Image (cartoon, rainbow, N blue to C red; front, side):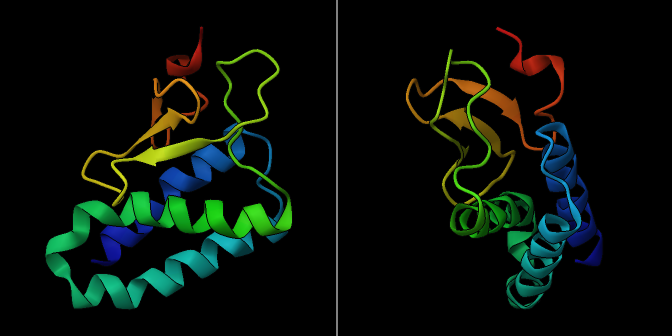
Length: 118
C-alpha cells in the first residue's frame, strides 16, 4: 500500500506543479492528505486503485479553504470554475473533468501535458 500512497503523492504533486501552486505550504497540505489516507488504505487494501483520486480530492478540498478553487479549468476561456475528479470515488483511473462542460481535461497527474490543449 505504501507504493500506492507514494504514487498518489507523485501524481497529485505533478498537477500542483503544472498549475503553479506547489509552494511549501501547499506541499504540506499534500503530505497531510497522504498521511490521513494511510489509515484508510490500510483498512481497505482492495481500494488501492482509489487512493490517488481520493488524495487529489482531499487536497482540492483543503485548498478551497486556503486559496480558492483548484485546479481551475484550463480549457474554458476566462474560467473561474474548477475541475473535479471522476469517478467521484477517486478511481479507478481518475481523470480531471470540467465542472461546467463535463468534458475530460486530463488524467490525474497529467494536467501539464498536451491533454489540456484546446
